[in-house]
Length: 343
Image (tube, rainbow, N blue to C red; front, side, top):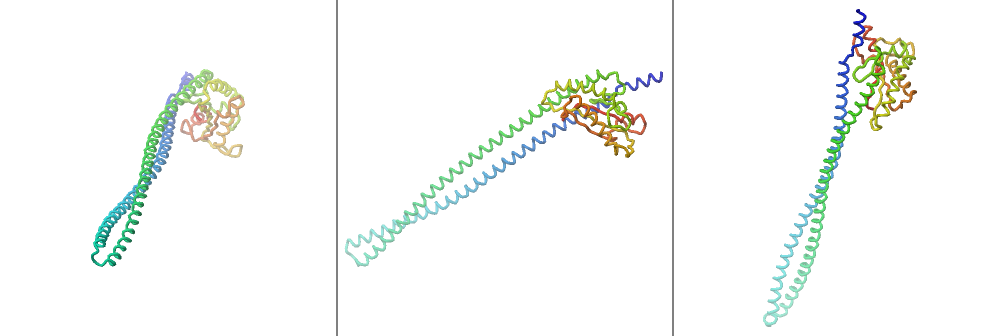
């Protein structure tokens, strides 16, 4: 009677580890999506930073051209003032020459002195006319330069506006890309979860009569004593038979999973907390757990499972299912775990 009760207790499915593993899977998916979001934000900040640098250079060029335009305007105003002064002086000189010409015509006064003065005034008048002509040429040149500067400023303002529009479009595209990427990742996670459920459902059917094989969340747990001799890292014959069933189920479900889903079967080796002697093949529990996981992976490869779909990992005694030094706890901790997950 006591034996029957103990047997029922051993066959009872422990749902709590499964619940914990489900939460862990959900947490990993959330962390992955947050990582993608952070990367997208980093790329967005990099592009925005580049746009800001371009905008700053354009604004600097506009400021320089604006200052140059103000300087040219000041120079033109000075030349226009000089031109006005020259024209006023020229008008005065013309008036004085006219009066001298009238005096000469009337024959009054000293004609020779008047002629000399008239000649000097004429020369001065010619010089002022030349200065006036040069001033007009300079004013015209400045007007042309100002027009060219205005065209450059207009072109820079157009380029600045186009850059701002492009920047807004880039931000919109990046935001849209991030949303679509999040949706695609969520779909991929859901799709892989569905195939994982199918795979473990088939394994449950195949291995349902085995009390030494447990289901912990989304992992199948094989006790090491079923697969390996004590202290050995090589699969025994019984272990190969068990792994053959797993390989057949994995090959069947693997053909159904789309190629664009990066899935792998992770084989994790675990030991108890009893140190190895160190005098044999393995120096410590790390090496023993890694060797056992690798032995299972190589057997799967020999059965036709692609090596790119397999991962071997050894955890030694550092990921126990149960704490404590009892033989029951150590027996549960000596195990091989199989998990279908993302690469």
